[in-house]
Each structure stands twice: as C-alpha cells, then as structure tokens.
Length: 508
Image (cartoon, rainbow, N blue to C red; front, side, top):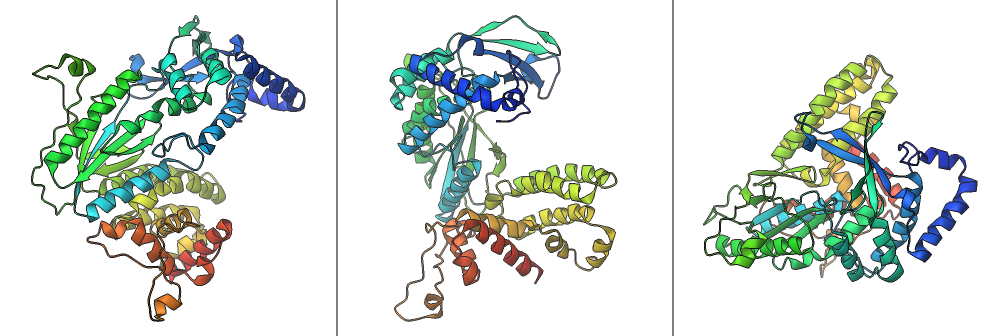
C-alpha cells in the first residue's frame, strides 16, 4: 500500500501503520476476521473526506471539479484483505464475463484494444463495414443502487454472511468536503460505492456482469463502465436493425439496474475501408427513453446517436477508415509539448535523470497501444521515430552526438532504446510469447526448406487490413527470428535477446 496517501478522517496515515507494522498487524487481522464473522463494518471507518480537484473550464462551476475521496488507511487494509479473496473466487470460478477487461489480473486496456483492433481488421479484410456504438454512462460508480448491487452480487455467488457484510459496508456512510483547512458538515451517502476504495471496482464488475449478455447480435468490449458494441456486415439496413435491437436492450438493462446512459456523449462510428463504397451510407440509431418503450408512442421524439468521424476510446483516437493517422497526430502533439520541457531541463538536470524521465514519460506515451496503432503505414511511424531522435539528442553528451552526426539511428543502440517501428514488433512478440494461438507450422508432404526450418504458416489476406491481423503478423515476425530466440522459453531471457536482436537489425 502506498505511503504517500493522505490520512482519512481518523488522521492515521499509512506510513504510521507501517512504522508499527509488527504490533498493529495482529490487531487489524483480528478486526478483519471479526468484521467477516459478524457481517459488520466499523461505523467510525465509514466517513470519507472529499477534496474537489479542478478539471477544466469555468472555475466557478462545481460540475468542473472532480471529487477525490480520502478514506481511512485501516479501512483500505480491511477492504484489501476481503477483496483479494473475493477476486480470487470470481477468477477461479470464471464468474465474470470474458468481455470485461477492467480491474482483473492479466487483463488491461492493452488486452482489450488488442482484441478490438484485431477483430476490426478481420472484418475489414472480409470487405465488411462495422457499426460501432461507444456508450457513455453518467457517473456510473456514484449512482449505483445498493439493493440492485447486492442482488447482482448474489447472482455472482456472493451470498450469505459476505453479502450481509457488503450491505453493512455500503450503508450508513457519510462524507465531508475539505477545502484548504476547512471541513464541511457531514452528509449521508445514499447510493454508489465508496470512491477510491478497493471494493468499489469489484462491486461494479459484479453489477455490470450481466450487461454483455443482453447484446444478442453485437460484439462487446468492456473496461469497467466503458462499453463498445459493434456489428459487421455488408447490408447497412440489416446491420442498423440489429444494432438498434441491442441498443434498446442496453437501455432497458440500464434502467432496470439503476444506471443512466448519457445519450449526448454516446457516439456512433461507421468503420469502413476508404476504397469501399457503401450502398447506403445513412445509419440512424435512436436512444429510446424507457418511457418511450412503455407508452408505445406512435410518433417517437427520442434523439439519435450522433455519428462521428473520429472517437476517443480508452485513450486511442479511432477514425472511420481505421488508419491511425489521427492517433499518430495525437501522440505527436503530446510529444511536442514534452520536447520543449525536456529542452529546458537539459540545461539544469543530469543526463541520467533525463533518460529516466524519457522512459517514464516519452516511452510510456509512445508505447501505449503501440501494438495496435503500430500496424499503420511506415510513413506515420517514421514521424514518431524522428521525434524520438530529437529527445535522444538531448539525453546524450556532445561527444556522443558528434559521433552519431552522420547517422542518428545509432542513438537508439547507444541509449539502448527501441525506435517505434521495432518497439511495435517487440510488443507483439512479447505479448504472444508462450501462446500458440496464431502460430501454425508449415505442413508439407515434401521436405521443403520451410518445413525443415520449422517456420510458421502465413495466411493469405485480401487487403492491407488483413496484413495487420495478428494471425499474419505474429507468424511473420517469428519467422524472422533466429532459432535461439524463437525457442527461448523464459520470458525475461526472451525479452533481453529480442531487444538486442532488433536493435542490431535496425542499425544493420
């Protein structure tokens, strides 16, 4: 647990607990066991301190502030003990929907985006178009009804004393707002899960666990409350009808489970090849209100989901042609801002610290979802590599810079940093290490060179979108590796050997 977190209403910091960890651990362990046995949670630990953090816009509007909850350190420890066992129970019994990638071990935005982009490329390779709906929910964690949440937890197998413990944990909670050194009067919390708690995300996952099941036609991709549903086809009218059915089902489910859909921020994106001509380019999906379903109005006045040419999904800029040009420009803009800061720091801090800052800030921006957008055209990736060189020139000393003056590509090997084009390959190979899903050995009746060398079969594709599919990219990359690296079973050794090999091939 982090020692940098502020103290809650009890004024006990995490660093204070760690100073007396040998003496306090048995007490907290006994307290945790008593909480579970009696299905009770200490009333003193139910109060949170809220600090308003400004986001953007007008400082005078309260809606432009994000409330950050500061909980008791002892409460966090108790929650963590219970949530760890609860998470193991959900994982071992495969209770959570496989389309949910949020707050689970071994799953992240990276795994979701990998599956998402690969499926899109597969449909585009089959010369289909995709209608994607990106749902937005209003303050999903703060508006949950406790009774609905407890019912959903029971459906996931959390029943009996543990369900009663969560009932006591969620009820009778309060908060006070802190601005500077002033505290407001306490206010009761009647809905939602405690923000910043370990139990909040797990509770939410169990509540939305049944959401993906109402999608009867569309593929679903969820990261906590971020839901994307899409359907591919060649007949726009039929696809529109099926997507409308699923959107109606999501609206009904949301109303039944106490979650509000933000229709204004819900967007629709029609993804298609820039060379494909849609027979009917109009697509109108309506977000019917729940009252509209019940009143059976003949003349519906509900609004349509806004169709956009570009949407931001989990930090990625996705456009209707799936070309990643917009996302590369988005990454470049962030790097340009950092470059000016690095230039100023280069006169004030040692170069070793500059390299640490590069790995922490620049490399993380480039590396996020690079295994997805790195499949774009080479000219777009070269823009990022040129920007990388500008950063590396600030990291090295003048003597090293003079040696590399004739070819700045040497900087990557000198600094032991992968350029974007190689880092993309590195991430794809590392993510697929130990998996045989996309690797099929070449089968020949005769002893051909490929069969003897144990090469993998590369499938035929229809267009450049098919060339971006993992079933083609991964065996192609593995076929380019030496046998010693390809057969390395240990992941850490595989990473080291692979990085050296890629840097050597780039310079050569």
